[in-house]
Length: 307
Image 1 (spheres, rainbow, N blue to C red):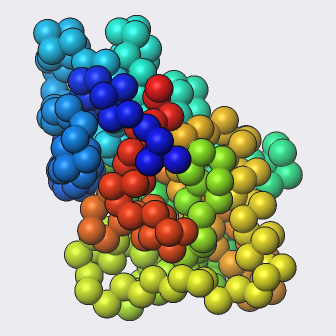
Image 2: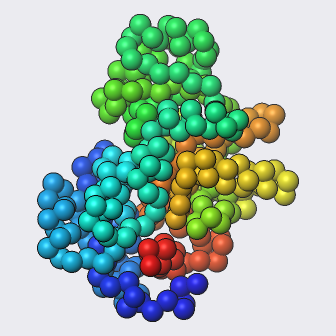
C-alpha cells in the first residue's frame, strides 16, 4: 500500500508528541521514533512537543496533517482531536468520540457490557467507605486502576482490604474516578488493529506481578510470544472479539486491545488504546513486523489514512 503513495501528497506534517500527561516520557520516545521514520522516508515532518501554545504553533506553521503520538490525557482522550477538527487539519487515528470513550475505562466497559461483550466484573471507588462494599461484592484478588490513565500508571493488584484502601489512595492521585475490577488469572494477550485489519496477537509474559509500567518500557525479561500459542479456533475467536470491541467504540485507523484468558479458556476484554506506544518496546510495531511490515511502512500506512 505505502509503495504506491507519493510522499509529496502528505505535505507538511506535524508529529504531535510529549504533552503534559503522566505518559509524557513514553510519548517523547514514541514521537522521536515516528518523526525519524517519516523524515527518513522523505516526508516533510516536524516534531511539536504539545503545550499550551499548540494551536498557535499549528496555525503559524501551516501544517497539512498531523500524526498524533500523544499518549494519555490531552492526546488520547479526544482533546487534541477536537482541536484539529476545529483547525481543519486531518489527523491519524480515531475521532473525538471514540478517543474520549476508549480513554475512559469505565465507560468502555459499560458499552461492552451493554453489547454482551465479555469484560471483568467491576465497580468504582469514590472513597474509603466504598472499599469494604466493593470487596464484599467482587472478592479478592482485584485490580485497581485510574479510569483515565494508560501505561498501567497508578495500577495495583490487591489481595485484602488494607491493600485495596492503599491502592485507591495511590490511584486517585491520577484520577478522581478509580476503577476496581475482578482479577482474571491466566495469560494476557494484546492485539493490534490497523485499518480494520487485526494483526497477529501477542502473548505477554512477565516476572512482575502484572504487565506494569516497568515491564512495558524498561524490563529486559518481558516475553513477547508471536505466534501467540493459541490453536487456530481460539486465535480466530480472539481476533473476532478484538474486532467487535473496536467496532463497539467506533475506533478507526489503529488501536490495540488488551485481553485476558481465564483457566477455562474464556477471553475477557480489559481496554483499548487508541494511540498505542511506538517505542522500541512497543507492541503495535512488533505485531506489524509479524505481519511483514517494518516500522517505516507502518507509520506511512498510518499517515496515508489521513489523505
